[in-house]
Length: 370
Ligand code: AGP
Image (cartoon, rainbow, N blue to C red; front, side, top):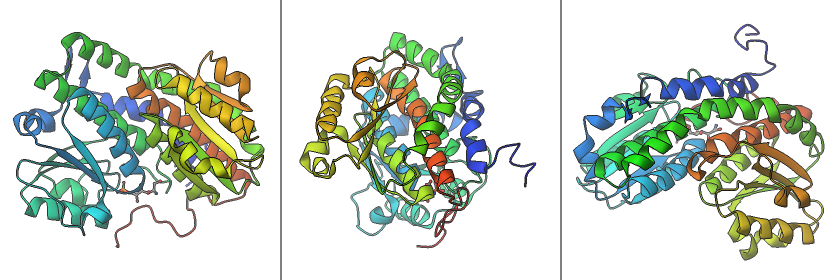
């Protein structure tokens, strides 16, 4: 097992550090920047059907559901097809309105999740075309879906999903950009700009690992005894906040909630005092000014702010208690990069609490029962 961990203390840490490579592997052979194309057989072979969809419903559970929420932002922004995102466990029991004109995208790392599997069967019975995004090759979900794309993140052993999540976001980015290019909603110039940028994401993830590893480890020491955490983000980074909170809950057993930053004033603000740590994702591109005022509101109530900001930020950084910097990107790709220091933060808090990081209590890597 020590050999499999490749010198890392846990699989989770190894998998966090593998992300520049796993994202590169997800893009390899698909993103052909010089030729100006995205090559994905599953999408190409079904292009007409996908682009004529009345709506796309994304079904998934847990972390994969968070990836689905970001997929909604991506597909609606670039391909202008209406998207709904549903927990597979709810979808399967509520007789949803799905027809032959609908596309269902099922996202699953393991490809074995029982609720997602049952939801796919129901969608197929209603005549929908089901597209799978799985990590495990030849898994049950990848076999039952009509078409699909693998994430190619490699085996994920840690129960808390890390590299599979960023690979899912990468595949969803490719799908949204490809659909948008072919249905004419995305100009060729914008498509070229975005694919060139997507191509640089593995390097940016490497950079964020190099520059934030020690800092997050230090910051984590201050929160070993925390009992609650809030995670806030807006736009594309709202689901990244949900995912940050889930990571902390799963492995450190600290109660954490994710919220869209603007919802703070509708309830969670009542919780804020000097004992409430708040992780806030505040990239320059993405409602920055609004988030600055959220940070001020938190500080006025003495909350402890851990700000995840772009490199060189001064405004948020000057009021935050702790600052984690990441390289600037278009907002649509920022969750891929911003999620990495959040993974590290949860990892180190859990390690300092003496928790079993790779196999947290009560959790299984794939949930094959209801
Ligand atoms: C992620 O950290 C969790 N362990 C869990 O939420 C997981 O994402 C969920 O069970 C879905 O699994 P799947 O992607 O294999 O379908």
